[in-house]
Amino acid sequence: MEVLARNPRIVNEKFREYFLPTLLISLANNLAVIIDSIMVGNILGSNPMAAIQLLSPVNQLYFALTVLFGLGASTLISLAMAGRKKEEAHDILTVAFVTVTVLTVLLMVFQFLFLNEIVTFLTSLENMEELITAYYIPFIIGTPFQLYLYSFVYCIRSDGRPKFASNLIIISSVINLVMDYVLMAIFHLGIAGSAIATVIGNVVSFILMLSQFFYKENTLWFDFGICKHVGEFFKMLYSLLSTGLAGAFATLLVTVRVFFLNHMVQYHGSNDGIVAMSVASMALILVSSIVMGACQTMVPLISTFYAQRDNKSVVYTFRRAVLYTLAILLVIVVFYEIFPSAFSFLFGIKDASELPETNLALRVTALSYPGMGLTFLFLYYFTSVQRNRMSLIVSFANGLLSVPVAYIFSSFMGLNGVWVGIVVAQYLTLLLAVGMLKYEEVRGKGKYENLLLLEPDKSEVANFSLKSDHPKEKIESALKSEPRLKTKAPVITGALSRLKKEAQPAFDVDVRINENDKDLIINCRVNGPNVDLDSLEIDGLKNVESDKVLGMNEIKITL
Image 1 (cartoon, rainbow, N blue to C red):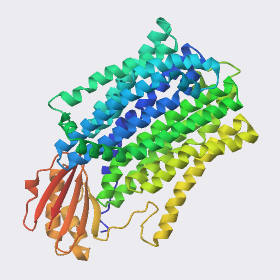
Image 2 (cartoon, rainbow, N blue to C red; image 1 turned 135 degrees about the vertical axis):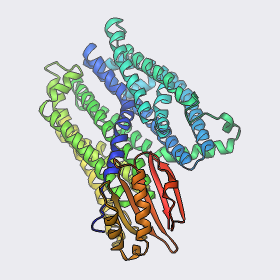
Image 3 (cartoon, rainbow, N blue to C red; image 1 turned 90 degrees about the vertical axis):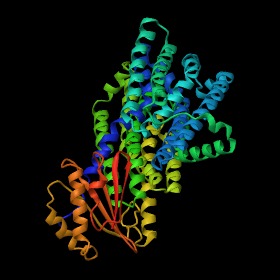
Image 4 (cartoon, rainbow, N blue to C red; image 1 turned 60 degrees about the horizontal axis):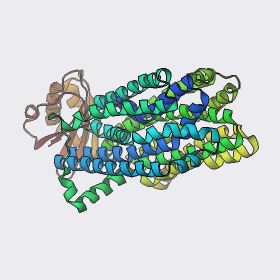
């Protein structure tokens, strides 16, 4: 098979296609907080901006809930649609909607009943309580629109409309930005105006989102008949929660970490320390959203390829995710190290007394970004290949390890020890993830073909890509060089040549040939237009099947 080799072109094209829309969806929940912090910092000052940061554990809790229901429902919907079970997909969507509705009511009632207690729990500084309360009340009122919008954009993406899903987020963010200025700078509503602006943006995008579920050309519908079957309803709900739990759990632990670090900073520092923590946290939220975009792009691709036992595509996808993540993060790290004040100014931090601590916090914590990126990639990789135990261990470490490590360092370095502890804990978590991989690889005693714990497919005879410039004669000659394909080479070459012609010259064709006890199975992947299966019917073929998976044509030819 020297003439025919595998290339990553199709995998790379699909990764690029999904990356930007997925990145925007990942940024969705955090964009509101980042925009509010920037506008509040520049219009109202550093203390109101710090108040928004102190409320971030509540916002992160909301984010965890959207991951729980959004990723859980969208994953199950994708599986149902792939299996041509449209009614089941409608039921899953309805179960998610009903559950989110009930949860919304409970959250709003609880937060209004215990508003003062929650605010006191979030801060020990009296001058912050009034600011937090002013922002928090409109935030609670906007609960249904935030949870609906940010949960169901995942489902829209699974319905084959990633661009529409990302456009909803862009619209919400633009409206939020404009209304922030109008309500705070023109109508002088203070920090409450910032929260109201966020709600308005979410309401508009929520109304636009409804078109996905009620226009006839859309494939997802609500079917409230499932509510009459209580047992089936809760069975689906359990499956949904189980599926989305890993991602939500990782996000929720970040909420716990932010809460404890906030109190640690308040103990060791004055208002300057809180402002520094606010800016460093906003920077971390921005960076983590970028990382999550790469992770969530990677997950459906790796899950699909892993299920197909296409190890090369798994490696190509993970490698592409690492490349995108590290390239972006290294640029950000260099920028923060050289121009930390530029990011501080973005949030209105211009006071000479606040800048030194804020810039130091940014410079030090920025060193943790590459480690965080790789850690999350491993965490989501473990989930994709069903290594759930390893994923949970990394989730725990990533969410909680920074608290004791920061506490230890801060005990003899003061406030600076908090920043150093965050960096040290991040790389300890990365070492833990890599160490678990290496341990499993060694324990496997040759069972795995690489550090990603992929088992070789012993039934695989060939794995290669066809380009438009591959002559038919060379394809047949290469196939004949493999003893198990020698007698079938003319038939395989004929089918592949016709498939390559149908796929058009601009598109590659990935080919995997497997052998079982009775047949040769040719699995072909085309990232292009639909292929006319009738054109592939030639003598010597038993069966030809086709499916659309993640927008790619998956064709199975049986000899």
